[in-house]
Length: 420
Image (cartoon, rainbow, N blue to C red; front, side, top):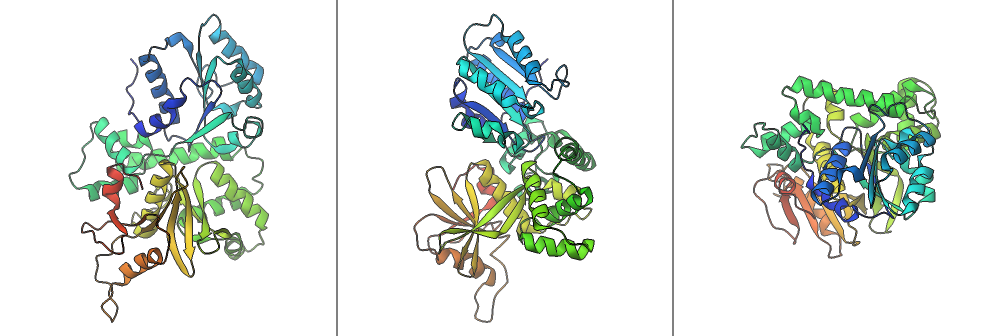
C-alpha cells in the first residue's frame, strides 16, 4: 500500500502550471532530505487524479534499486526507451538524483526535443545547474528550489502525523527551532532520535556531495571553514576576515581563493545560503560583506551540545528561509551607517524592507526615556524615502503603529502563511 504523503501545497502551486509543458524541464533542487522525492510523488498522484494513465508515468530513482549502478547516458537512455515503448500520448518522465549520470544534459535535451515528454528531475545540490544544463538549455528549464519545512508546514505535518501540537504557539516555535524542519524528523518521537537523524543527513551530504569533490584538497581545512560558517550564521563575514581567523587557529597562511572555493561548495550542497549586502544610497551590491544563513537550523544545534537559543541570528534565519521559500530575492541592506536586516524583491520587482528582533516591548530605555531597541529597529526603516512596505518582525504580542511601518508577530505571520 502506498504511503500517504503530507501535501506541500505551496510548492505544488508553483509547479502545477508546468505539468503538461514539454518544452520546459522542471528542475527540483534543495538540500538532501528536504522532500524533493516526496514532491515528485505528489505530482504523480495529481497527474493520475487528472486522468493520466499510470503507464504514461516513467519513474527512475538513481539512488534506489534497481538503478543504483546506472551511471552512463546510454544506460539511462535504454531504460527510458524500454519504459516508454508503445506508450501513446504525453509521457511524464521523473528522474531522481539525475546528477549521478555524467553528461545527463544531452539525454534530457534529446527527449525534450521530441515534444511528447514532460520531464521532472531532482538533484540534491546545484551542481546539476552548473554545467551543460545551464549553458545549453538556457530558457528551457525552470528551477524550483525547495527548503526544509517552514513553521506553518512544521505544524501542518505534525497534525498530519497525529503528533500532539501545543496550544502555546511559542512553545511549538522553540521546538521547531531546536528540531529543525526536515520532514522525517517530525515522525520521530524522541529528541535524541531527531538529532541522530539530522547528523545522518550531514553524513550523507558529506559522503555523496562533498567527499568526492576534487576541489577539496585539504579536508581538515574544509571542515574548519564549515564549522566556522555554521557556528557564526547570521554574522557579517568577509573572505579576508575568515582568512585571518584561519591563520590564527591553524597557524598557517590560507589563500583567499581556497576559502572562496570552499564557501562555494557549502552553498552548492545547500548547507548554507549567502546573503549579499546592498547599499540603498548607491544602489549597488557591496562585495566582501556577506552573511550566511543555514538551510536548516538543526545543522547548528546537531553539532553543538548547548541548546540555548541566541534569538537574534536564529530569528533572522527563520525569516530568511521563509522569505526564500516564498520566492523572494533577499539582500542585507545598508543606508549610511545603519543596517537593514533584509531587502526582499518579488517577481514583479516590488521591494520590501524587513527588520527582525526578538522583542521591542521591553525595559531597554535610555536616559531620555526612549526605548533603545525600538529606536534601533525603526530608525533605519524611517530613513528610507521610497513608499515600498516596511516591516518590523518580532515575537511581541502587543503590536504598535509607528511611521506607517507594519509591526508583525513572526510566529503568527508565518503560521498563517502570509506574504509580504
